Image (spheres, helix red, strand yellow):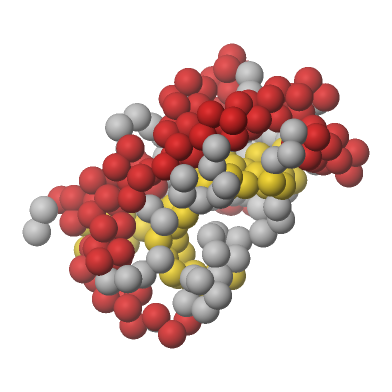
Amino acid sequence: MELSDNIFIFQKGFNYSQDGPGNRLVYHLCGCNLKCPWCSNPEGMTLTEKAEKLSVTDIVKEALSCRMMFIDGGGVTLTGGEVTCQKPAVLNLIKALKENNLHTCIETNASITDCEEIFSEVDYMIADFKSPFPDKLKAVTGADINIIKNNLLYRAKTGKPLLIRIPLINSFNASPEDAVAFADFFEFLQKESNNDNLFFEILTYHEYGKEKYEKLGKEYTVCDGFVTDNDVKALAKEIKKRNLKLINT
Ligand code: SF4
């Protein structure tokens, strides 16, 4: 068995609609290239000895045995951590699932290069877009905005579904200037791609990761992250003003 036949996960389970369409079997893959201070899965940022190793064949068998559960257009979702940290095996897995007529979805931070084959193969892609401002994004998360923008444009131009999620966080990306810059980039994506399956969703800040950080002995550094209804409305208004598709999953 080749190394690229193995996937390392830290969690799995079913979830309805929030990790792609319908009821889905969701695998959380180990490893992430970024360092978002609000991450709700800090235990998955690195590959630890607690990780479970599954072969592509094992996952396909497991997914096929769950087929009856995939109601409302469901299937298999790969999330993280960051799925593209394990890109050779992820590509193999997506192809194998599709060969078995199973619907595939990934959730990605879209900040790694050379993932075009994954981004064109997968049936449904969910991607974070955390800040429209390059310096702030780099300083807080470590991501290069140009790589993310290129990846999102690449996927959008395939015409396949792309859901872009904005984690809205006070004191990071919830100002009126952010709202305009977010919406301007989304409008550019829509115009450049002409993709009818381009959707946007606002996720408000939560502290699901705080306790996990403390358990791991790490400092949770986000202070005052909660946003107001008005912050959400301001961003929603800018997105809707440009006739873009804002949804709630
Ligand atoms: S990209 Fe996602 S998984 Fe990685 S650190 Fe940020 S929030 Fe966590």
